[in-house]
Image 1 (cartoon, rainbow, N blue to C red):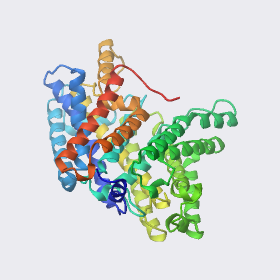
Image 2: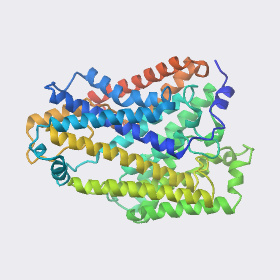
Image 3: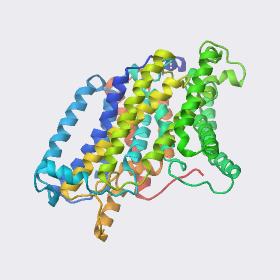
Image 4: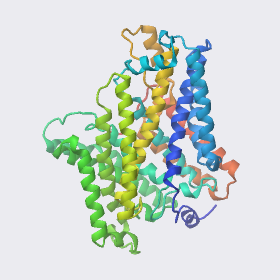
Length: 495
């Protein structure tokens, strides 16, 4: 077995990849999600009987959604652009075939008139499914990366950067914070019950599971001698502590200031933090100070970077607030997708200016450039998922088949009992819904399985075939556990 020092060196001193490659990777998951939906629609058009057995649905979702993500960051990472183009071409061909064989009356006439009727049509608006898919896929990609990074088959450019740079895993950290913010009570428009002081106290109490998990991870890492990258968060700090503090501080700010001003708070916090980095000795303290004496010095990266993550969270609340508004027309959602894309491109331009005027992206400090990049990339990913969901909705409308789970459905005036039963059955056999039911448990399970795998397998000296096989088995076991809990309607909450 490789020593802990060798493993730490293996995941250290990396400079990341290009913004383009990270953005390119955001196209794969939406295409895979669209492929899965189109497969079910084509199967239905071919007189197939749905739903399948629970094992068949698990295998379908794992093959369509999880396996491509594992292969894309390992064996196929160098030809990712060809993989994406190939899947996109197949999806477009299948989409055209669905249109040509559609059963719905709206298909009558030209393609232009069909699209026009679709744009003016209504959609069920009680949920925003692509937000759910975003949160699930961020969790899944995180689960893949935390183990894959320990294998040599995982490109080093995807790993977390040491000081500056944009690694795929760097975005994963910020995206996880963003994903939590999108569905927080404030973003969903829930009013504060009772006084602001009692509300703040409730939020303080509500994060105890994260604090507990942070201490459990700390104790397990220290007692087992498990390798840890100290310059990532510090000697005692970890991401669970960051999540807890971000949630408490953000709740306090949102209780004091209007929720609709979240974007302004995000800008003020991120901008002020960057000014402090540039005009004081804080940056030098984070980068050049090699001493680890005292709690603050020992955990300076984790403690100070919380400020940047709060800014990301506040931006996420604003985005969630916008997305959670009630809309029931397809054309309204097309306008939302346009705004998401335009905001994303605007933020990427702001990132370009920010890096020229200040400094490059740094996850270690969670500086202003990192905050802007995280939000811009998250909005681009959300845009890709929403476009995929919109294409899937179009396929549902023209095929007269609305039972693809975790996606929009055409509006129906009257819902028959058989249709409702069918939809519930499909939801009960969906891996996306399974992970969504127990998000924190899935994250915890992935962390536990990662530690166990590192104990049992010499990850550094594993060949590529073994590495990919282990990763696929690891992700399948995570999926199986969470899927079994879902089909038995078991939700495990820690509070």
